[in-house]
Image 1 (cartoon, rainbow, N blue to C red):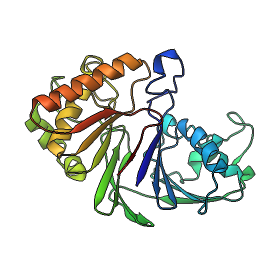
Image 2 (cartoon, rainbow, N blue to C red):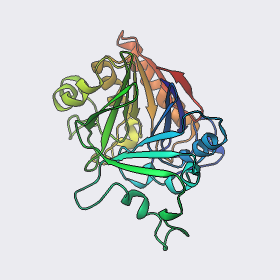
Image 3 (spheres, rainbow, N blue to C red):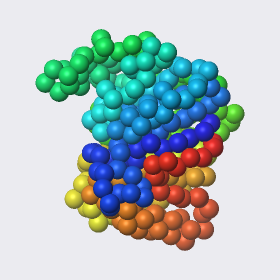
Length: 289
């Protein structure tokens, strides 16, 4: 699998001089396996990705979009995704929604006249919608995909993508649980309170995980459904992952603050004697899994 980041920011896009290094677009990651395209979340980063896909001379024009949850920063790029308006494409959208909604409503609600000038019937691509839930297991060609529920709003999913024995876990918008009366994580509490998702991530080649806050900001954000970098360092070590990628940064965090989080997180891991390659995601980051 080839991996490329098109959006790394949480909550709201933040273009400007303070976000040039790590990027200001909201979540979107492209996974390519042979000729198959899988997209993780559809934040504002999906607009540039769509423009790129339309320009490419692709042999295989089926696109699969996996939506972790329907908070706006993870879906707001959908109406601007160029392949929807191109008859050469077929697009499959996988998402979990509550019992009163359908997956297609993710688009329909955004493209109402109050919010958008045209409706979904303007699309030229063939678009298919698939409901997925916690513990879903399915294949997209050679890639096996598993889902797990995380500690965020209702129906927020994590995805594990496995090909040729190597796994990548995408776990955005997850609050790692520990003692609620303290902002200091304790390893035993992390194990006891997060055991199911630790097992989900266990020994993965790559873990892309929510790192919305540093520990200072997190003190006022308990229960918001996001993690701080200190708890994430312990979580990654317990899960015994090989590569940890920080993701979904607070929109108020400058490039310098993200860099400081990376230094602090890497220091905790290396100080423990564990070897985990730790990096901060940025728009344009590419690697093979």
